[in-house]
Length: 331
Image (cartoon, rainbow, N blue to C red; front, side):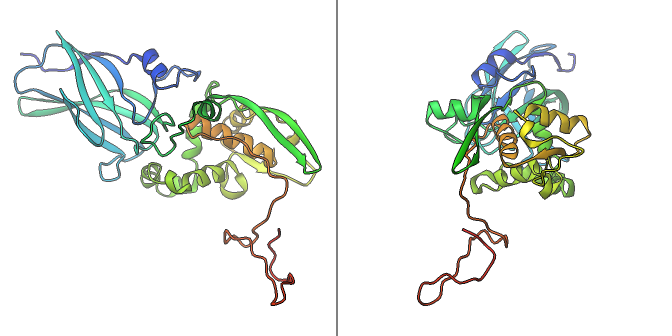
């Protein structure tokens, strides 16, 4: 009997993308959301024999490992099971298996490789089947980014254009902004933002693993904001409030994130010159929506400022309640 091996695979990309609310992305790659099943047809060279078993391996990032939760090894079963990655055999006809795979709500987002593990005759053979992208899932109650309100979810995740309020508190203006999170190459660029952080450059494997754990504490959101701001971590945009924009573009001339993100990639990921508050906000909003994190741009015209980076705005009063000239934070 010939060795069991896969001959072909039908990812059912169109139906899976529609079910996962990713069909708006320009890219034709298999783009999925975590904690939601996807199915595919696996064509084998022959039927499974007695004692032969099939399993799968899903891995992401450099040096994937089970301990870091960047690699999952799981069997193909005929029923459902709880916890972790799991694969269920939905149907078997001749040499064709219909398989459904479900990722956990805490799986790290990013590019994944799916491999098949075939156990036959006392030997294990691992063969790569293909790649897919896994995103946050605001449609899943188990996911930390879940948003129950349908109208808000549609706006904060699916809407690709909007307005941003600019100006001052006594002279508020409005500009249109193309978030463009579904446009060509934008998702891949936003995934690249994750891999350009200082933490990733220091320890790539650990940084990828942490992407599954940080959202509940808002740490990931803060880190994405840092990656967009080149002043903090050699990110996407360089800020300039001087009025002199020689060597770059006047921040007031931008009307969307797509041109900025593509310029960042085109120049070898050097900070794009220049941005100001609303430009950072619009670009950050694009990155978050593309990754599946519900977000919107809010403009604050009267802000308190923390200047000593202790996350508190400190104001001092004497015993009589009179403000004291102490500290540099402002209200």
